[in-house]
Amino acid sequence: ALRTRRRVGFGLLCVLAMGVLTLVAAVQMTSAAPQELENTDPNGFKEKGWPSESVPNPSKLEGARQCGRHQVTQGSAVCDPDGLLTSEAADKIEELIDAARKDIHIPIPSLGGEGRPVQIAVLVINKMAPGADGRRPTSRDFAKQVHDMWGVGDSQAGTGVVLFLSKADRMVYISTGDAARDRLSDKECDKIIGNMIPLLKSQRYDLAVQKGVQGIVKGVSVASTWWNRNRDRVIVAGVAAAVGCSWYMSYRKRLTVAAQWAGASRALQLLESRQGQAQEALRLGGDTSGNWQCPICLDDFSYDSPAP
Image (cartoon, rainbow, N blue to C red; front, top):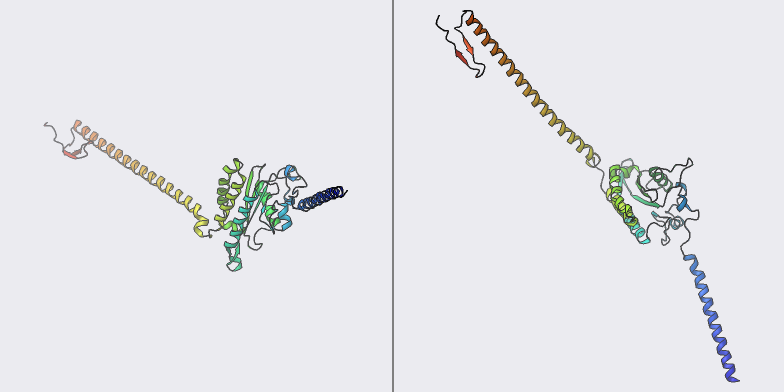
């Protein structure tokens, strides 16, 4: 009987232990559930397309989570609500942007030359939503609307830059504030996007966006000078001046040759005319004791009249 009671007790103990383990596992699963990635696109914008006014602002923690930046503890500068970037790539992009904000300041003349930090933000979505008229907005309009809505850059100076990528629309645009545009011209933006295109075509979105941000950081780090702002114009003007000079010299040379040819033709005609007059005078028995000119050698020769 004692042995039986021990067995029963041992069995109850095992059942109790299993119950405790099951309860602990359930508690762990319940506590872990909120840490799973929440649905950042409850409205299905990834497939339907994002309206610009619905894009979350990553500068606040809640917006950063909606932008797919679940691991951050504060706001972010990267918004990737459709998950086109890996978390590692987004972190690297964030580091580049943070370093630029700390290290690069643009002097603002209207503020007495006071430097304001550069602010860069990145938005990557699957596609844009059509507007009320059914037309899909341009990447320029979409990017600028998001730029203004997020408030990227100093409001008094315009030191913000937004790199926008829409995958399905195959569109890229770089929106710049006034002060940032002094350092990052439209031509420089086109060059940055051109360097991104081969990577985008091969669907290497991580590297494409990193390369784009690196180009932006490099562009805004160069101080605005007269030469940087007008270099292209000066080069074009110099080439045009060189071509114009070359054409003018060639034109003058042609005029000189034409004038020389005309002068030689007139001199030859005059000589031929004089020779004809001399021959005509001889034929009529006139005075031929004068000199005449050889039309070939253009030298004067004494002409002896034949004996009567």
